[in-house]
Image (cartoon, rainbow over all chains, first blue to last red; front, side, top):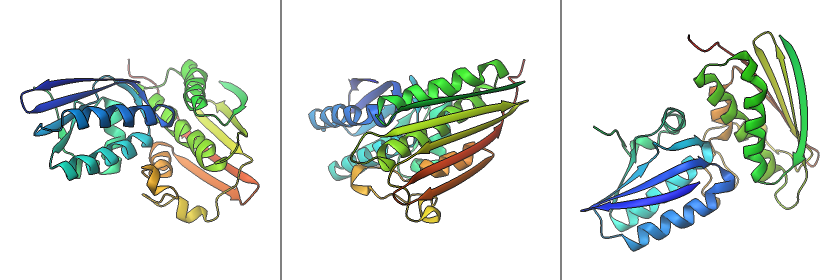
Length: 105
Length: 142
C-alpha cells in the first residue's frame, strides 16, 4: 500500500492507495502518524479511501488508532470517499459514529 | 459445476494477500457479483490473518485452505495447527480481542459472519483451529 498526502489550507488529505491488510498495516500506521505529526496544525484530516482496492478488519484497527491520536491533538478526522468494499467493512464497524463519512461533491 | 482445491502455506503475513487472491481466482469461473467476490476475499483474509497472527504468535507454522464448489455453493475450510482458541464463543463476540495494545479491532469473526452464509469455528487449545465457511455465490448482473 502507498500513502500520499495533500495539504489544503487547514485540511490534510491522506490517500490510502492499494491493499490495507495485516501485512501492510505497520508501514501504513508509521507513515500516516508521521504525516499527522508533521502537519498537526491543521483543523481536520480526511482519510481518502477512494483508491483502496482491498481492506479487512485490520483497517478498522488502524483507523481507530489514528482517531485516538487525532483526538489527543484536538483534530477532527473524517473517512473520505470510501470505495464500495471499504465502506461495507467500515459500516459494520460503527467507526462512522466517531469519524464521519464524507463524499466528494 | 463441481471443483475443489487445497493449498498449504507458511503462516507469514504476505500470504494473507496470496490466500485471498487464490480464492478469488478459484471462484472466478462462477462469474460472481462484485459484492460476493469482495465478501469472499475479505472473509478469507480475516480467517487466514487469524491463523497467522493468533494461531502462530511466536513461530511460523502451516495454514491450509481447502475450497469446494458445488453448483453455486462455495465451501471453504481454513485450518491451522497453532495454539488454538480457549473460548470460541468469546472470540466470536464483536470487538473482542486478545491483543488490544496492537490496535486490533476484534471485528474479524464478525465480518466473516456478516459476509458468509454459514460459519463454524472449531478449536482446541494447543492443537489448532478450523474455520468452515459456506456461501452461495450469486451471478453477476448482466
